[in-house]
Amino acid sequence: MKLRTSVLAITAVMLGLTVTPAQASTSDENQMSPEACSKTQAESTFKYAIYYNSNHGGAYRNIGYSVYDFADERIGGAPQGGLQPLNFCHGGNGNGQGIKNNAASVKNKHTTYYAVTYFNSGYKGSSDWSSPSSGRNLSVTYNENASFAWQTL
Image 1: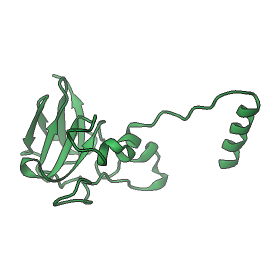
Image 2 (image 1 turned 45 degrees about the horizontal axis):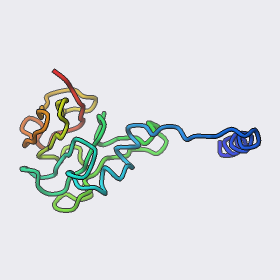
Image 3 (image 1 turned 180 degrees about the vertical axis):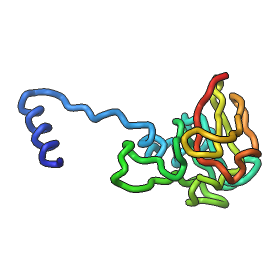
């Protein structure tokens, strides 16, 4: 595959074509973007933050896109790399631990969409809805959270 990619790139250069990388998938963004772990929740353009402790305490992670399974957010959607869990990454209690079945509160900075945290993977099961521009302690999905999606009424 590397050889084929290199040959295509060299051919494109020889023909004077520009090669642009494919746009990152949402999994790539949730896993790799500096918005997720390098910026505070206030600084991040990602609108959803999930916290290890109640009342928005402890470690947290900024998330920009719906997550089908917190324990398996595959980069590029490919299964070759195995499980790619999303972890809490902003210091405090829970730092470095997996988000799935470990969260106690969330913040929704979006002004239009509801942030829905689901009990099961695949946006299924019981859920906690966080209104636009609000935060809350999880109740139904407290330490039993597996996926997240943006929703409208």
